[in-house]
Length: 268
Image (cartoon, rainbow, N blue to C red; front, top):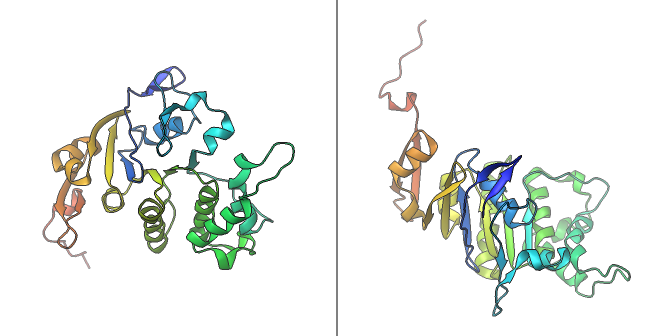
């Protein structure tokens, strides 16, 4: 796939594969094309060249562009980076937005809607908040509401664009735990853009490294996380070593001041 903005290519011949029931993390420096590629997969940005195919379980792959908007929305959903915070609606109301592709245009009926909404609330641990107004929630709780909205959409593929941005450490961990649960327990295929390299290594089955709009490496975190490769991609020295407990690669970006062995005392 090649994607352009104003006739300038920003993603170049990217071949991205999201294995069923696995978590794939897209990593890379700012401006590397991660979010653009994800939006193109979600049909929110038209590709200049290339195609997207989707395959339901035990079914032949189909051309995503050949699907109607509602049919595609029953297969793939995207949790975008920026969303308008609704006011005057309950948590259940917002989660119910995810059922839009299933509502008949004329009758407005959705036989499975109530069940899927309750399921999404339960999976995201929001059942006790269902009747609360979303304006009363914290940032982390609101992020869970948007997750639940995506789950209520009941798709095989969930795309997430920087879902931990602006969240404190606790909610970052909880969101990533939820991502892992969706793949392991519910068989959801997840593609997620992450800036934190350690978070990506911890949550993903495979990582895809982009620089300047090109995929330069793809594989397990252990295969992709090489110090020289990450240093070149990010333009700063990045050391890599396995975690002593889990064996998962951990990174350390080394700045000028990190190399000093002794800090000078401030003058009195």
